[in-house]
Image (cartoon, rainbow, N blue to C red):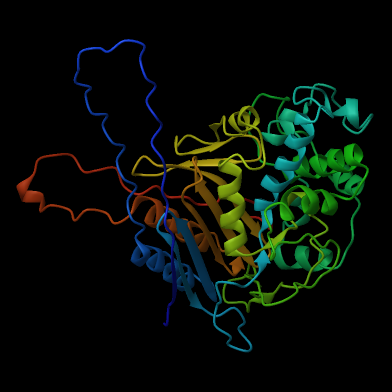
Length: 416
């Protein structure tokens, strides 16, 4: 399998601050040297390719990853972006990013908080009167998946392909989607526990449109896409096509051995502000890095966004305000989001200082094993090469902590 490679060098530099002059001379003194922070490991791009090839071995027609760091950009692609034409995967191809869209929606809503248009701990019903049956549900509960609102997609996609075909070309209103959720029992009391639900970010979209008086597409464009010059990113609901060079998406049926379903063209109206953004690896690198560097939010708001709580018992996965944190085996913490929409799995993460970022995609879904092994790109990119293990007979030391497995928490039609 051929692997494409792109490396773009970049230089960085800085100036040391000037020392202030003292009013009177003083005796020379020795200042202890400050210990330098350990250098970030070089990305293990061979390991990245191993993860991409593993995604193909598990059922993805193709996969790709792009790493951006102080030394430049490195990218890898494997397989095809179109099973019919056999066109190879291209690092510049656009694709549906699924729930990475939730971070876009969170940024917009948090900007509105900064502008005084709403409060994080205010009831949602203050801004959308009568929408929800419980005045205790706050804006913060939506962004942290602690509202208790049922995820309507559980019933919508109980059968993967029939569920998808039933909504492929449908256009829903936000109110219809919320109604589907409210027809189901709530999962928790407000604020009690993390329970992932697309409904939360449908309501976020409603808040954005109510407070701005404009479609959510305009908010993305004016507040994120245009300022960051994300030329391959768009929100085109309910248009079904992906314009320009793109990777086609392929959905695995529930029945073993059944042929893949080309799921590229769809409205994604069932997700909207919870998962309908289209982007590319380069744009996702730019977005996550810019977010962590403070280009989109104030330091105080970014601190709130990155304040996380565990999502499970592994103590490696956490959620903040529309943002995930993964703790990798080397101790590095990365922030971003995962995405699944019919035909695509996506990872888009950056270090907290924004200096290193990775985006990865495999063009299939409803195959959780693909999502799990694709997560191996994070370990390889941010932790670098693992040191060779010493022969067991030479050491009595306990084995080092292994690589963190990063599967989707559940693999329905649109998840993380």
